[in-house]
Amino acid sequence: MTSPLVFKNTLPVGLLSLTQAIALPLLAAALLVVMRWYFSQAFDEPFIVLLTLVIGLGGLLLQPERGLMSQVMGGRRRLITRLAARWLVLLFTLLAVGYATKRSGDISRRMIITWALVTPGFLIGAALLMREALRQVLSDPMSARRAIFVGYNEISLSLAQRVERTSSAALTVAGFFDDRAPHRLAPAQEGVLKGGLKDIVRYVNANRIDVIFVALPVSHLLRVQELLDDLRDTTVSIYYAPMVLPFDSIQSGASEFLGVPVIALCETPFHGYRGVSKRLTDLVLASAILIPALPLMGVIALLVKRTSPGPVLFKQRRYGLDGHEILVYKFRTMTVTEDGDSVRQATATDSRITPLGRYLRRYSLDELPQLFNVIQGRMSLVGPRPHAVAHNEEYRKLIKGYMVRHKVPPGITGLAQINGCRGETARVEEMRARVEYDLEYLRRWTPLLDLKILALTAVRLLRDEKAY
Image (cartoon, rainbow, N blue to C red):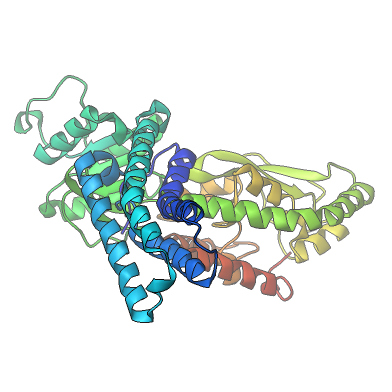
């Protein structure tokens, strides 16, 4: 189930989400260690088993509510009641395990009772502090995303009013779109209605809109589907309110936002702690690869400089997350460094490729500098391969859904590459197949899928006939 609305300030939000997931279990375990010291309990096998159970059960039970909005909008009483109930479940489970294994006599009962009574106060205090920190981050204008509403009706007006009253929703209302004549609509403030459905794509592109709420009735299924098709040329996040519809969705899932049911029709999979885990994995693995690779990269740089005139590194503009331009680094493998309105793709017999460059491209050694792109946060180890800006502008007009692949950071390798989609795309069908794999990656993403793609990439490097 997709958590509603991913915020612009994703790193602080993601770090808070990760902290929430681990802080309370670790706090309960830390207090148990303090009690062990205070009551002179031996640090023996029974205590180690108890400590392990506390961390494991705490990781399952002492978790925040699903969805950032549920955490922020839920009252303090609800948080306290929920946490107290889960603490009782944890204690009951520990007692049941101790009774079943007949090991409860090995642990000081005074220590356990004191810990059981003292810990809930610390847990509730920590949970309230993290909730307030989350509210502050989401209330930061830098976190806000611009939203428009498709349909000017009771549902969209109600949701827009709640957004405007709730700073921690991290949204600003940019306007409404509706095809109906003005006399058929409820009275609207001047400037609120921005146009009809046909004007949405142009408005989104011109005003950097981040989120669209579609609030049209089921009788408008065909119109909504046409709108979704048109919006596949953007990187906007799309939500439907209030009912599930049979659309081809990216990271779909039903949830609630400010009391209104919403269904994600197009959203990034990297929200909350998932985005942090993706980023931390990239940093750790990219650094682990880069450090031993530095001597090899030094040798390659020297050979590139000595064997052909021109710069060692080739820098090219490509589209990154949400369609923003980034500079991608590669070792230069050609006699040209094209980065204009027209970029000719490399072919198997391309005369522009240098002898050294052909070898580097064959084993993808020319892409080693992209590890710096990963550490910078512009790219990921795994994701849709970034294309030259000129190619993006060409194919976004020819392939429906092409720009949706930019809902995630581009990768050094991806699902398309391990399935043979690399090299020249002489026909539109070849690029369309690559895009289909990219969209499938967005639908199926898990950390395990990333690891699988990295492993298969290493295998394919040794026998990939399309590497040139």
